[in-house]
Length: 444
Image 1 (cartoon, rainbow, N blue to C red):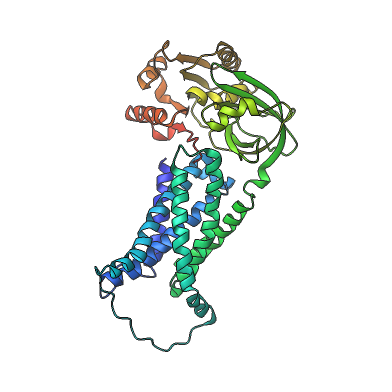
Image 2: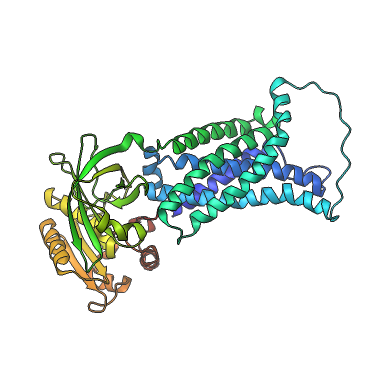
């Protein structure tokens, strides 16, 4: 989360600094309307800049993953860029539109227009000025649509498949807002650094929007596959699916995830890969839990022999660090990346000392037997805690079981709130924050 916060603040400060190098928030004379003029420009540049970067992040840039610690963190930054852009855009809209309303209500008196001075405009500036009325109208109505779409994206109860479809419409809204910004941004900005950066962002964001609308995101990382086997664990509400891939998969590290499409109408869903990569058999295993509308219907929808599309791999939850001792915590379905790593460790010698804690509210003897066998084969110490029998897992209990915890790194996958509580507990007891790794497996 620290990298996400730093990145968000850095982006806002950079765009602000570039704008301040070209203009000021303290115009002379300082009046409501003079401030309105510069603030509308500032908020417009900041808002479309944030949207542009959010659009670029939607392309799932693989090169950026190591710098932000995985696609899950990239999507979290994408989300907060969107929220920030929404907040800035609302301010921009109010100062632009609200002022006109207040003049109409008699709350403000509009200053007299300055007399027009004959001036010769270049062809580009003249054309941009001729577009101002259209750009303002488009910007206003697209703003209303974009606000609705962003709010829907933040509503957790809004079905995922509808979220994917409606969120895609934001790309079209972005193209309209890019036109709005290009026309209404002060012409003098384009000859200064703020204009150069803004032009680059508008161009990049527009390309990203077109790729989004044409379904080209991740196109170079997609591989076709066929479902080979399905194993259902009713007590856990879990389905284990094995897929045989066609040629083209680049391999993956244990702990990474992929986007899987079994129904084009439903779209791609992200699932952690629960198997180590073996280039000899081209198989991937996914473990999914019935947590929502889509995953609850997988048991009835998926059939052996059904074709699927797999895109990936993504993520930096790869267990790679310099600590000789690791403590893994896989809560509930969060055990999935650890299952993949157990299989990897069993096939590849690993000198690390590893303790795996698996707290769960549901119990299935067959699944536990398989997990125990995998842990034994990998030389990993398994600590199973079934809710109602083994008690609840917390920092104090882990420290009691693993006295040497201070020399270990922590790898957590499970409910975000649980992970954050453990992180805060261990950091408060002296653990360096960078040694607690947590995957933010929420893609909206």
